[in-house]
Image 1 (cartoon, rainbow, N blue to C red):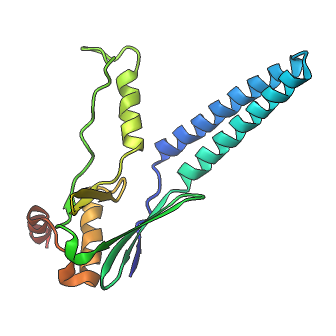
Image 2 (image 1 turned 180 degrees about the vertical axis):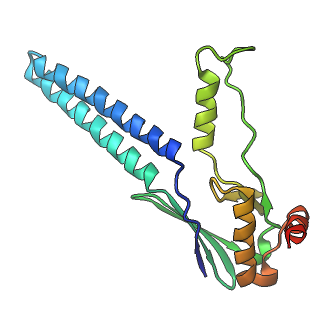
Image 3 (image 1 turned 60 degrees about the vertical axis):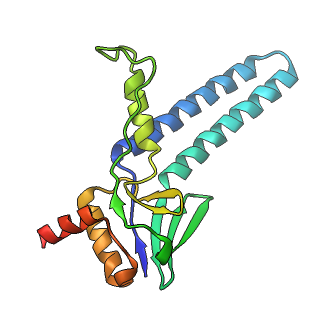
Length: 190
């Protein structure tokens, strides 16, 4: 059974990626414009190549981040998590018998930026740190596999995670174990 989490980036994150791409393109355009005014041919060639690399980097990062998808594949013996980006595919396989109970972890606790002010964030360091940590989170659902904690379900809220676990339980049956706290929450709703 293949479950496509259909995880799409929130609109604010897509806007941020657009801003990043536009900023990179503006920098590349400035470098390119100044390279055309340079007197030496080799300086023009080097800065033109640099500007082109900035354009390509901005386009690649934007398209890679926007095209992120996460899928779950459930088989009789394996629980498979597939992370796809534009030119990258990461597949992780886990034996059902070695997976600890699933639990909803939520977002990881935020660490404060060292330059954050004590009363007010004048320079926006802490706001930027919040944004970076929310963009680069690993997921909200987790389990232990050996000594490693595996997280998936990026930007999945608890009520959606419950529906996801119910679908997984329909297929996996007794192979899928859930945290007792989560089990109680799902029983209360029924």
